[in-house]
Image (cartoon, rainbow over all chains, first blue to last red; front, top):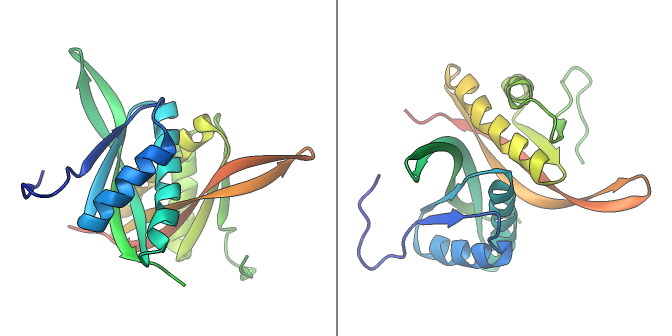
Length: 99
Length: 99
């Protein structure tokens, strides 16, 4: 974990199967305009699906700023109501958009 | 589309909800040892879930080769039995593993 500057938006977005991919994409694009990296956490197939859609949509939002993002997936263990569940973390990193 | 050298393994992997993420990860790791890029295509939440798991597993397979991969998601339209369906394409690119 890294220490966050107080003025920055939080870098971690938790996405569920009910999340609206457009809304998550807007939030992710806003974070990526401020920060070099972000993280999306999602548990379950429905949530992971929404998360990936959100990244694809965020890429189109960021194109106007000549910015693109990549995602780096890894497994995470999350404790929910005293039960451990395996989820996915998507590390999101900036890169310059390709023309 | 890019022209493939005849000796290279095909760079596109189609993943379904029934795909075994470990098997897909093995195939992806093999492709990435030969090529700079690959593509995973997945239609539906179950398939996208397996695809993302496969990328996370492939990262661990490639770590021994000091290789890491990132994925860049985008929407694709695929024709299945005369019907158009929207799916996800994950462009997979190499990068040097971080230690």
